[in-house]
Length: 570
Ligand code: HEM
Image (cartoon, rainbow, N blue to C red; front, top):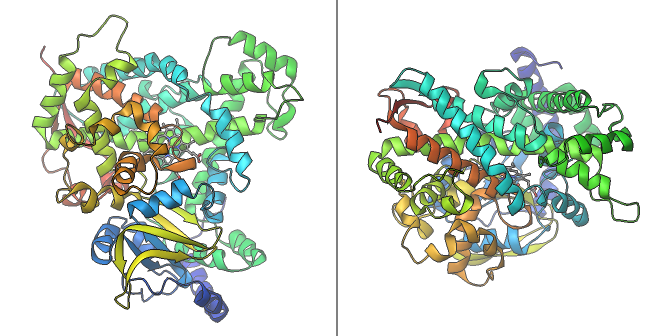
């Protein structure tokens, strides 16, 4: 696919400015009707084509200061004057994500991006309520309690392998933790999703791994042209939007497509080599007899592909169709994409934070050492019974949530309630925010997770102990995460409690389906690593900003996390 040179990009930027200026008047007329002008917010950007969007994409951490200046709900003006309601208020979040059900869908722009990367899987489906539920019903089989129990030895096996690789390095070596975290997570996801050995920990190169690694490389380095093109595409008629699409393809979109193609090719090759040929131009042509043979050969396997193909095989024409072959392929891309970066970065951040606070590292190691390792390996219950381990996982998810923002769009006129009233531009106290159909809403997970109203004055500080021994303890143990859905929305305190640990995994009907998978995977890896190694910061390697930004690792220099790893003397 063709990528544009800087000269062409600035040329298209000027053309875009002209085109957008022409439609500006028309758009602003319709915008006047739908405006959050009554809300406070940062001063409008000089660049109408960029608004605050470029700044926010490149510096997501700035949103925290804005929330602290304007309150838990404020307005930003994005590309082409498009307004967004920024939200970190607990009751508002609960209303949008939980009570709202499907009434605040993903934006068309985001849905297209997801389709490009992952096809039409669970993250993509929306619109028809029944369609999302159909996908979810199928995938719940893959992420059920018994499945997770089945996956656990596999997580532990990969954690052991990672430890072995590090033992092969010379002692006290500086290791790029981010790179190794990505490897172990990719190998786990390959095996869980289609029983495939990516072999990253064995230094085997893979196209899927390569593209996954780079897929979001520029999502926090979005060029001005990309921000402007996307902004214009949102507001012009579809025919013009299509024209723009052919004229300018952002690099991020190219990477997304390459990842999706590589995943489909890898799964296709794998299936073919196992006697289940897949015609990539017509994926629905799987032969029933071949499918039955495949399932017979892999009887007892519980990877996602196997579970879903088995589900299709047991579907009778009379039963409601749960999922088809093409959707199965899309679920694999979706799982690889959704489960990779956030889990790998969480693992990296936790080791980093434990290096910054050696006493926390020691306390966690003492908890791990106190458990006598049974021959058969630790069980899910053993991990659940480690309060400090789980407190550290909660705290890293709070402080470095992986996903900073979730963008939604109201599909009806609505009124959003607030837990903490705000001051409007005219000085009026507002307890509710009117929203009109089509207006954009941005859920600021990172800002919510650092909200002083919920976490107190030390909300920016790493402190796992905050999750232990407080009044919240009973509600927040990992085992009861799921129950938090049912907490009524009229109670402020429980809502805060309900969301505070859940928010990093989203909330409501579209919450992360893989959250328990991720937590158990993290538990297994952290326990293995802490019992084998001691970690230290390597001096001079960390930019100052890394300690204060939400996700500084996204910037290129910091995409490495170099730590000194020492074998423990037992
Ligand atoms: C620490 C790791 C993870 C974090 C922080 C995380 C975060 C999230 C968030 C915030 C959402 C909601 C997005 C939205 O509402 O638009 C989400 C959705 C999703 N996650 Fe995760 N996730 C993690 C790990 C995983 C893993 C390991 C898997 C699969 C193995 C996974 C699969 C998914 C899927 C399929 C969705 C879409 C659910 C839907 O739309 O119904 N995630 N994740």
